[in-house]
Image 1 (cartoon, helix red, strand yellow):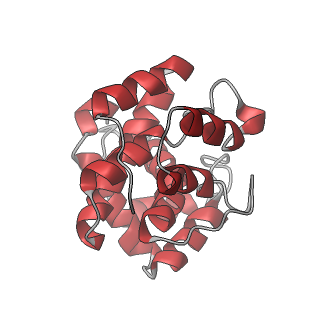
Image 2 (tube, helix red, strand yellow):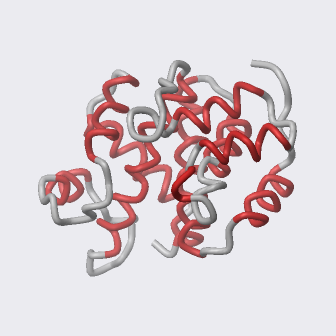
Length: 188
């Protein structure tokens, strides 16, 4: 991978050019934390993976019908390296486009994106409203209830875990651990 990404302050400023929703910001931070966590496990650059995780939904608020497509345009126009743009676009694989995740970075983003939202929903219905005491078994119980967080595409998460060669339980525990590192910022 070559090319460099802007510093985190610039990444956040770019995101804010297209978004002002506090919940989308929390989602961006949750995905960033998960990406940093997995970068450490896979020997990737934590800063690089975190920035890509943070920016992945840059177009979602303003262009929900052109999600990933507009992200590509925005990031290319800002001079982001091709590998980073491709990673962002690949998180829409099988739903919005046919850009299949290939690298560990891409597969991780694909796997954790929907799962961070699901874990947040699981935490918010707990008496503690926190990820601090959330366990995998609680997430699995909710996972089996189709009406709970119905907007989460469970098949994407399951395919993502398979792509990474990890079990759903392992993926879920690792994402919970990552989200715990930013729980105060997430309000969880």
